[in-house]
Length: 139
Image (cartoon, rainbow, N blue to C red):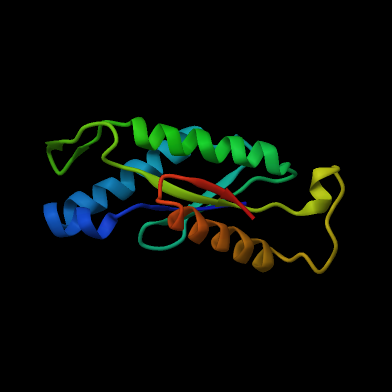
């Protein structure tokens, strides 16, 4: 599971307006949709937060997917609210968590609920932000 959000969205909103911020979130959503594996389910979870569930995905692969999305967002040169922005304007931080049992291709224990997986990925997201943003951290 990946939990990600747009870095410094409030600053973008404060400086350029909420339409610009909304389009930044939309841009990240489009990049995310283009980059997740076909078996994944991606959704917007909150204002600038997204969740991606990738069934039967080893931690190393989930980390690779997360870093690919992070790089694609950071390399984008978006046009937001009619204003061109340079590459590097947008960045995301990503937390990654997986069920240990899925590493070996077997289901995890009953105790490893989706909620626990989300909490682990969310905690890893906070660590990614603490590392300076534009990072991926694994639970």
